[in-house]
Length: 180
Image 1 (spheres, helix red, strand yellow):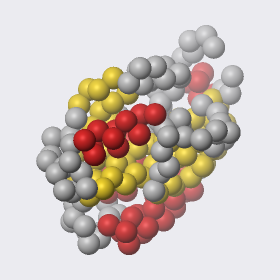
Image 2 (cartoon, rainbow, N blue to C red):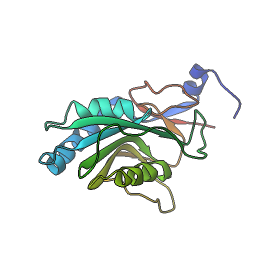
Image 3 (cartoon, rainbow, N blue to C red):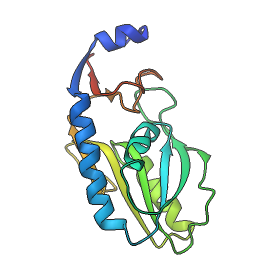
Image 4 (cartoon, rainbow, N blue to C red):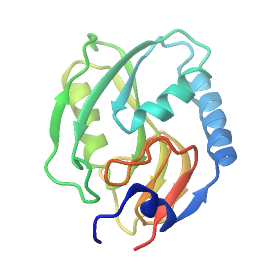
């Protein structure tokens, strides 16, 4: 696909999940996460940069004490196809013996999220759970299964609510699919 202006990208896209559906999914997830983790005082780790919008919305709905950290590992670098995993930042908090909750925007192939989960275990976490706003439905197994999933999307390139298309539109309040 040729490089398009951000507005052209949006015009060539269809809405998959409107804002209200995304917000309702986050509320449902917050209730499920609270029931599971309220007695654990976990370390919650936002996966940058896509997970930041989702994390910000979810965190305000969690009603238990937690510590917040982030990790930055990427395979996409503003492209639509993933390549080799690049570590940009590891968690700063001591994860030894702690329950960790990873928050990410999308579970696509699962390679990045699995690598981050494995890294947290290597850093001493007792248990690592994962929560993703979106899970892409694929016709093959993934190396990881998310513990909490907000919404599902078809196997299309999706963006909005933290997910980008060529570096643009992370700020959209709904989920869109790019039409090629």
